[in-house]
Image (tube, rainbow, N blue to C red; front, side):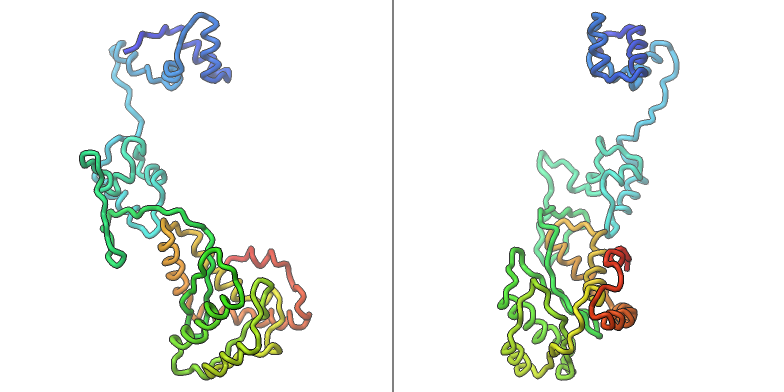
Length: 320
């Protein structure tokens, strides 16, 4: 135990604290008066950590400790287990505040995951599983550093959505890349698997290409028509290019982005799996409700020859 501090010095420290002085300023002021006091001692005086020793010397009962408990009871452990079993569990600090438990002395992760928190002679238990096997309940996947941006391609039909196509990073969208990896898989595989009996009755309507996408030559269109006996829309049937008539851009991927805001994947494969799961939840009824509301908008845009009928920023502020 360190040397006792004069009560007059403690009073001086509290007076300087009330005047707005910091701990460093208090130490300098006391040093000018030939009083050597460390920052730790000043911290104990300010936060009243010396009250326990003073009450014991005075023969008074020890004051109650309002600090969070260092050990978790069975009720707290069950509550933590219930919080961590959710699909999107809160963070460790949030759980510690909810159960009123000290995160410093008893980390929430060690309570929620006993095998990882247990000490095994300086080593930890590591669970190795194959990609097809499910991990244990207390398995903690390793977090990976990956880019938050990912490019995907998708399509919505009257019978549901098709599987997303993932575009690799740092890919240059050229003519060959667009035809071989985007257009042909959609026409030959995706649509045929979803509608195998009505393939000849399908007609694919595409809007005018943006500046970032390549132009599709006429010979490629003829090859696609002859090879699959399917119809591609003519240029005269393409709608007027305008941001006001893009329900796919506004609803499909806009809905997907909003759903992914509350997801916190730890790996890139997990992020891709969440994208696919949320994309499959889009039903034809949802699409029908969106497209039926856009009929009047499309007619209005066609009447004004593609000019904007409202501010675009108001469209993006609307939540689906």
